[in-house]
Image (cartoon, rainbow, N blue to C red; front, top):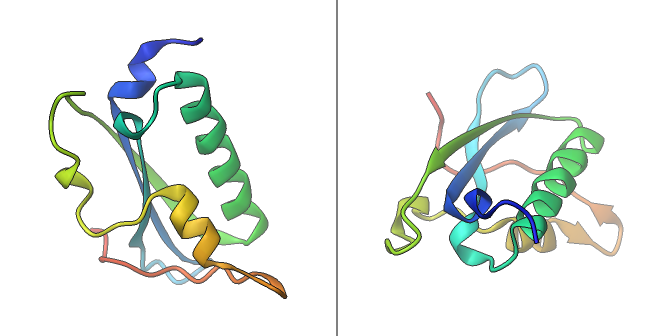
Length: 103
């Protein structure tokens, strides 16, 4: 098992279409949702790779969180697994960004 600091980080992924300059909150990876820090790192790498393949503009913002605090700081944003599942269709990934504007 890796460094437990991963379990105390909230990563917000802001997404947009390449060249648009308009980024919106797409999903979060919240370390408090995990018990294994290696899985956090795996999901961050998987998410980053998927965004690159979909050619989405993306910005990841990382902030520390107290592991005992409620998960409300992520607001309405879905988790990475939920976001990825919602954007996979029979035809493949759709890659549509949505969410709150970033700025």
